[in-house]
Image (cartoon, rainbow, N blue to C red; front, top):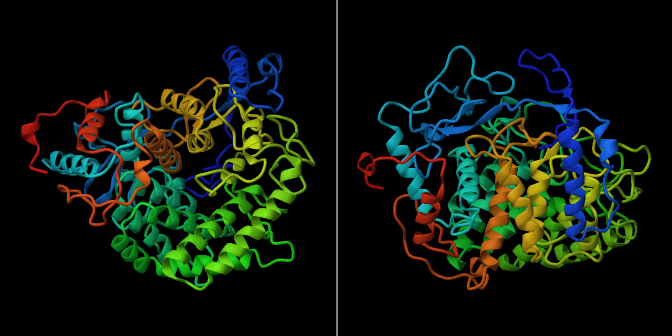
Amino acid sequence: MTRATPRPAADGTRARPPAVRDVRPAASAAVGAATALALALGALAPPPPDAADAAARTWASIPLYQEGVAAGPGGTFAVVPAGSSPAYLPGSRVLAVPSPAVVTGPGGAGTAHGAAPASVARTAPAGGSAALAARSRGWVAAGDPPGSGTRFADLGLDALLDLRTLAADDGAVVAGPSPFWRYVWPRDAAFAAVALARTGHPDDAVRVLSFLQSVQGADGTFEARYLPDGSGVPDDRPGQSDGPGWAMWAVGALLAHLHDDARDAALARLSGLVTRSTDRLLAEVDTPDGLPRASSDYWELPAGELTLGTAAPILAGLEASARVAHVRADPREADAATGAARLRTAVEETFGPAGYPRTVGGSATGTPSGRPSGTVARDAATAFLLPPFQPAALTGAERAWRSSVPAMLRPAGGLAPGGSWRADGVSWTPQTALYALAAASTGDQVQAEHWLDWLDAHRTATGALPEKVLADGSPAAVAPLAWTSALVVLALAELDARRPGQEMSSMRITDTAARSEGTSSVSSIPSTRAASSAAALSSSVRYQTADASSDPPS
C-alpha cells in the first residue's frame, strides 16, 4: 500500500515526515550486490546509482509499527507489539500465552500506528485459545497451503494465516492492523480473494468479493477504500478506476478454481458485481482511442495523465469479463472481448514503443531511483501486463518488465514501486512480491525464488510480511500487509502448480471429497492433499508445540 504523504495522527494533526539515519556502509554494499543480482537475472536497463552515490546518502528511518497480529474470537485480531516475539499455537495466529496486545480489529482501540495504549485487551477469553487454534488448523487442512514440502512452507503458511486473520467473517479484508490501514482497498481485497481461492478456500473468496459487491457504486465504480463495516468511506479521497478491473480479474480467477455447479452458485451470488463491473469497464474504454481516462492508481497519487497502473488492471478486467460472460452466456461477451482487444492494442501502441513507462507521455529510461521532472521511469505495473493478469503478455512487455528491475532496486535488495519513486532507500514488499508472482507465472522459477527468499529473510519476529524494508534491511511500517501476504501466497501457489508431477493440477476442475471442520462448501481444485497440509503445519519453526490433548476434536 503506497503512502506518499504523512498521515494524520490520531488527534487529526498531520504526522511528521519520516526521520532519516545514516546507514551508508550497509547501503553501499547492498546496492552493489543488488545491481549484480539484477544483471544476473537478465535485466537490460542501466543499473541504479553506484555505490559511491549511495554512500553519500542518508535514508528514511521508519519504525516497525507492530510485529504482527494475533487472532481473537469472532473474527477480531490483536496487535503483537513491536519488539516482542510471542509464540503461536500450531497452525494458527492464536497466541500460545494470552498477551496484553491491543485489539485492533473493527471497533478496536489503538494509537496512530497500532502501538498498545495504557488500557489493553486480551486476544481470547480464558480457555478459548485452544478451540480457536483447532478451528484454524481445520481450515488450513481443508485447503492447500502454498509452498508445502519446500523451503517456503513456513513463509507460505504464515502469509496465509495472516491473510485469514485480517479477514472479517463478512469478507472485509483490511489492508493491515494499524488504524490508518484498517480499511478495505478493492485492489487488496481482490488479491486476497484470488489467494484464498487458489489455496482451496473458495467460500472465503466469495465472501470477500461479496463485500466488494456490497460497497460498489450503482454505476460500477469503486472508491479508493472503505470502512470495514461497509458503512461508507473514511475520507474524501477520489475513487480509482482500476477497482472494477481488479474485481473482475478476481472473479475470473475464482471461477477457474470451481466446479460447474459451484461456479453457477458463485456467479449467482456475485451477479451484481459482475454486471456493474463489466458495464463500468466498457464505459471506461468508450473513448476515441480506446484508452481509459486518467485516474489515481496503486501509487495512490493524483494522476494528470493515464498511467500504466490504471490501463493494465482495466485490461485485465475486460479480459476476465469476456471469459465470465461466456460462462454466463451473457450477450456482452462480444463487447467485452472487443473492448479488451482494442485496449490491448492501444496500450501496446501507446506505452509499448517507449518501453512501457509509467505514463503515456513518459520515458522508461528516466533517472533511476530519483524523482526526475518531466519524464518518468519504469513502473512495477509492467508486471500487470503479464500472466496471471493477462491471458498472454503484451508485445514487448516481458522484456520491459525484466528491464525495470535495476531502476527499482533499493539498497536492501527489494524493489520500489517505480524508477521515479522517491530515493529514500525503502524497499516495498508489495512490488517485490508482485515481481515474484510475475516471475512464477512466466516460468522464471529462479527469479521467483530469489524474490521470495528476499521476502522470507525480511519478515518480522512473528513471521509477518511488513509493508516496507529500510536500507539497512530492517522491517518497517505496518505488518502484516494483506496485499503482500496475498501476493506471496499466489506466487508460491503458482510455483507449486509448476513443480514436476503437478501438471498444473491446481487449474483442473475435478471432484473433491468433503473435508473436516473448516472445509469449504464450495468444491475447489487443490493440487496437494492433507499430508502436505500436515507437513506445512509441522514445518513452521516459530510455532510453540502444543499438547494435542488440549485441543477439542476438529
